[in-house]
Image (tube, rainbow, N blue to C red; front, side):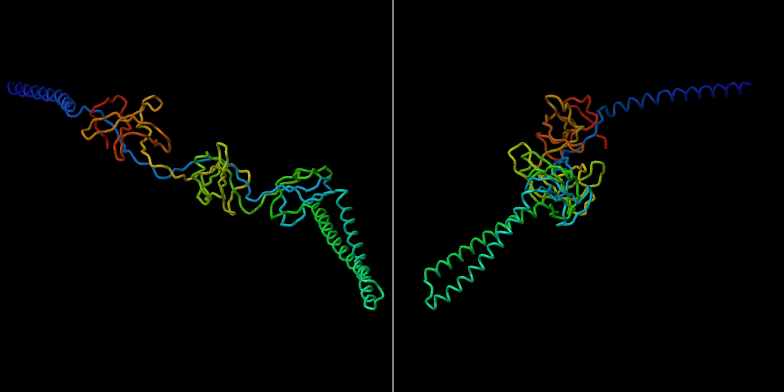
Length: 359
């Protein structure tokens, strides 16, 4: 009986010892952890130098490289139109015909004048030959022969002028028929048959099939750094694909914006009238860049970044933010590429605080 009691007592003592040991271990661990490291935990990123070029984006509308709105040189009534919207026409193909009651009679009169002078010139030629034969036999005075020769020369000159007038009248009559200057599609029609057409008024619009281009407008300072032949990329507004192009011409204007024409390959899938984004690679001066998350108080009067020093503390450095792109912002600050700035965990940090950097 005594042996059983002693065994039970030893069991109770052992249980109490184990419970006491379990209660002390966590408290000891927590104190040790607190004594090990109480620094704030942060993430850092390195300051980098921006690339020597920068991609800028501008909006534009695709248009055909060859385009024209033909017009008549003279006023009149549109007599016929030989094409419809969307029709493909070849170079030299007739498009429309004008009716002008003055031009055709002028051509007829010019042709009649040339025929009249031809007859008169032929008669004078015979008279000169006859007078020359009579002069050889001394049957006519030299003055009469000279008069006939002079009259023939004057008539020949008058005929040359009449031929020139006839050519001019013929050209004006030919201009009454509009012809396609190049292979194109009929984009639009502005005048219907029977309508009066003023001189120089567009009758229709032609869209060439020899390639497309995009015209954009850029600031004057940027336009001064662009030259024909520079590469450009064009992407449709609703697609991610980018097509290769090149700058065809750069305008020079006295306004705030300069027109720039970007040419695309003739095999391009873009259609005239489509909205696109033009991406230009522009040479830029090198600058420092940091992640946007590193800049504190970016909209305030004194934006700054926290720089990690060699002794593991942070130092506040004022910056002047610039252009933002792809999550990085250009800055002006007394920093160098490779310096480490805090990008996360800087909410409560002060000047000189020690930090622990997460990998």
